[in-house]
Amino acid sequence: MRKKATYTIRDVAAFKEALLDWAGRFTEVVWLDSNQHQDQYSSFEAVLAVDPLTSIRADTHNAFDALRAYQKTTQDWIFGYLSYDLKNDIEALSSDNADGLNFPELYFFQPKKLIRIKGNKVDFLYLNGVAEDMETDFSEISELKVADMESDNGPEAAKIKLRIFKDEYFKRVSRLLHHIHRGDVYEANFCQEFYVEALEIKPYATYRRLNAISRPPFAAFMRLDDKYLLSASPERYLKKMGDTLISQPIKGTARRAKDKEEDERLKKALETDTKERAENIMIVDLVRNDLSKNANKGSVRVAELCKVYSFPQVHQMISTITAEVSQAIDPVQLIRESFPMGSMTGAPKVSAMKIIEALEASKRSLYSGAVGYFTPEGDFDFNVVIRSILYNATRKYVSYSVGSAITAKAAPDREYEECLIKAKAMREVLER
Image (cartoon, rainbow, N blue to C red):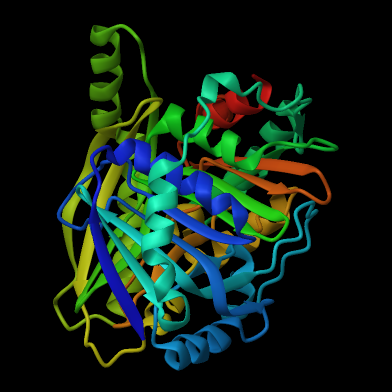
């Protein structure tokens, strides 16, 4: 049973910074931040979950069954992640590429302390055993003085390595195009890893810098013991609100420009780019098919098609697909039957996953997976783990991956340039 206390905060931005700083004392942390992006599907400005009462870790064997049992048993808020490689629990697939991160494939926990910001109000939702801490914690967080990001020297100089060099990237994309022209697949998201070895970073400070650059709607910071996710994700994978499902895949990226006229030209060019629109529409069709597996008959609809949104570093083409589902359907089943998300696989999905596993040089791990939460009522919301830094502190291994959708009209040099645009923010915070 959770007790609730609500407080008014004068400076929301300052409180958020202090709250994340306060979270640094815990070894299991999930922080989700919308960065003031509000739409009809928004539930809060930010939420912090810390201090597990119970938790679950799983590999790819029967992971979704284990999550289903855990979610039903707790019937409470649970926070965590699904790695991309849970595909192997759904289909007869494998993940045999290099893995320098060693994250569990699935992890969720039931937090003793849950703090949620809505507008200028903050809710403390604490379990009975720690409910008496609410007033003390609120006072402590309110009085914290957070160091200015500019006063932090950042990580030591990072020597970023490529898992696939440019010439090899071209060769592998050419092989993927061969599969497309042969009819094995008509779109596949091909990804590459950039990594740094023997590097120590300050996860909280690095996340703050990454978030300040990008200000995305689905930012996330996660800590699981010595493993960290620093995510500036602009993409929602799947949300359940009552009997409504919402998916908002991204396909189509263009750089921003400082000159307003050039920036507007780049945005308009993305809006009318036939290749980018075709990529987006292919994934919309895939998502419609995924959602229709459990949707009420005739309820799947495209609420918004190929709309371009602007973020600090990139323009993105986003579509919104919704569906109505019976409240009797298990929420974990809704995720399992649409995972991994189509925007990070391709179509047909299983064929695409087989091909990209053979062509990519690293295990995706949490990249291309999802971070989010379930509510006690069985609702949920998960992002897509992209534009993110993954860090294993024990191994001193830092990784970020980027990818692009390859279709029949793809030009390898343009796809490579798109990857570099997407990698820019992560590279900047590691090389500063």
